Length: 247
Image (cartoon, rainbow, N blue to C red):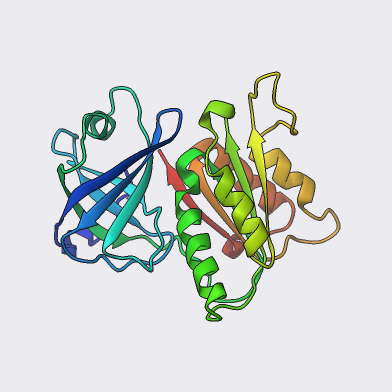
């Protein structure tokens, strides 16, 4: 679980579970109505109270939803066998009461117009969904300039893949967005290139100059360490690399 010093200052916010949407194998989007808005920045996370969790009765989740709707909260969660939060959510039904605290974290978009490369594994795509949903909404309203986004989204196989319709819509609607889906262990029926996100990213990095822009890494720890090493080896500055590690 991620811990932010001083997080105790965030008072509990009651919520009611409004909708449960399965999106992939063991992965669901949960929508909650909050008793009061939790204004947050895209990329931040909230803590959910999990009474049976030890040693600390909370679990942290990146916010999946657009910050333009702070009264509603969406979380994209992969349920793990035997996990305290996963078992609680697996048994949850619409109308159940939950408690959240937040927002927390600094994994947010840099306030400049430099190109952005987003690398995610699994539900690590959640903060990017918030970022790109907000950017698309603001750009459509004329409130955000065009900005280059490239997304590398890695999952194990077709059963873990989700958000494909949303990615295609963003490619149509955003002025400079592109993405690549990376399946590390696809079935024989998969017709696209296979491999890991780090290898796919490596193919796009210049070999004669340092990488340009900001690089955001979110997901499992090994992917983050491998991608950080790749970027530094290719000449990136550590200040260009931002990451949120899921344990």
